[in-house]
Amino acid sequence: MSPAVAARGKIRRAARCGQSIPLGYALDAKGRQTTDPNVALDGGTVQPIGGPKGSALAMLMDVIGGVISGAAFGGEVRNHFEDYEAPQNVRHFVMAIKPDLFVSREEYTRRMVTLVQRVHADPTAEGFDEVIMPGERERRPRGQTSPHRGAVPRQRDGRVAGRGCQGRAATAAGFR
Image (cartoon, rainbow, N blue to C red; front, side, top):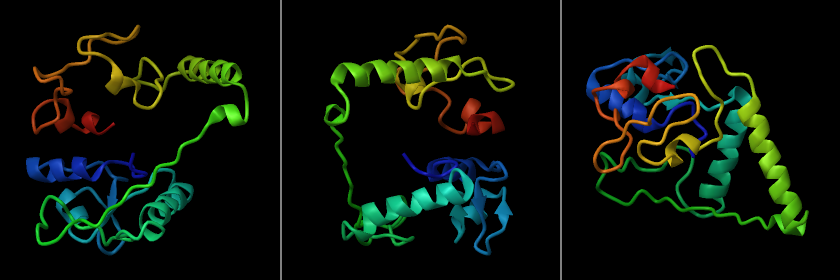
């Protein structure tokens, strides 16, 4: 998961489709807010989630995934969509945590269930019907409905519909 407000792929899609991006997604090469995806992609940067704290998390990920691993970091990762002259020079960091070193497996499971229930019970923001856990929407099987919404639209190959220049992803609402 990227620690950015939006995945760079969404900005590339907006550029390809001739659409603007929401204010707050990216900065231009001079550090100014922009809604022009082409300006954002031409020397600009995608904004981190959570302001300064999100920026610190993004930097930590860069240190762990790039500096420590010996891979590219700090803007050196090559664009795999446009630059075919050399490898991207990316590596991965994987951390495994064994919760039962800290609490019993039963305690861990009980506490996680409580956390999920609390998240689902949170009040919804205006215009939303539910509060879900990260990745929950993507894990819903084709055609499965939530208690509060209709079926998740999918294409024949199982991918979520509306990912191209047509449909929900092409509108400002598609950038949620």
